[in-house]
Length: 320
Image (cartoon, rainbow, N blue to C red):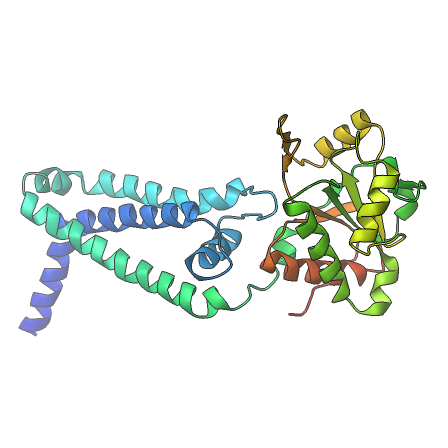
């Protein structure tokens, strides 16, 4: 009985004294540093970078295609520790004030908190970067990434000199992207990724699919130039349409698509965002994806989902 009372007394002293609030504040401080580390770690195809991206997608509401975060997700992750810290300061102010005069104890409590977070966070990072989370494919987060914005309208000319507009494609699934013929960097990757993803789709689904690539250099990319680009990649209409038009009109469309781009006046090379805007059968922007191995697999999953949506406003889940 006396042993039990001693244990209870020890727990009470731990909770009422400076040990508990100092340790708790230390844990929350190191936890915030861990969240910040995940936030700042660059994405990578595997390892720590892959784990960090997956963590951001699920916990921070991160969209890899746009680089945007959902504020509500960020607040839900970063705000509670600060609120709890305020609560601790309010109720344990006196013990905390006294422990500042005891640097040895203060270092012990904070060091213990740091050790605990390092062990738990390090274990999570190790498991995530070296096993399932780091090397296995993240399931396509269809519902988390799904949007319902009205797609930008356009009326342009394709590589065959024929008009191409979004209204005539209503009822089909449209992949809207942007490239330019003289691009030496990522534009070929965009086209190769689109073609590879579509090649993975069942033959019966491709009839309702169209890829429209808007030129980022409309002053130079005439229909004849875009025909050469289409032939080079063996991407012929009607499945693949390379669209151009009046430069002012085209640039306004690219701005509405939120495709940032900057031209180097000396080289003529355009530094630009890499985007696949997936438009569903109802004319709504359903997904925004980018390039990369994981994004290519997600592109296949997203297209499969959208092509199987036959009824207006229907939502079909993709089985992974």
